[in-house]
Image (cartoon, rainbow, N blue to C red; front, top):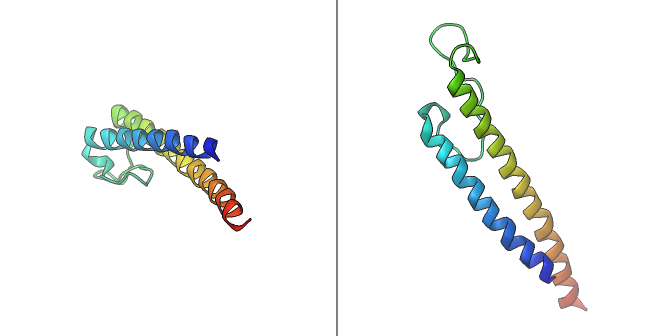
Length: 97
């Protein structure tokens, strides 16, 4: 049970760190928006095309970095959820026995 508490604390700090990186990436370009929880996809530009690597290479690189940070954040979030459920089940077993 102590290991779960320690893991939850460590993963909590990593989760906060990853969300701060996403907020940092969002501030670098206004086209990325302000959301921390969603991936950013191709945004429409004037005309019939979407932004591709040929149109705006720097933005595409930034978007890919941000999407990797969002994916990492989701992995941490679901890991916290699984460890928290393990902690709660062990805690309930101690209380009920």
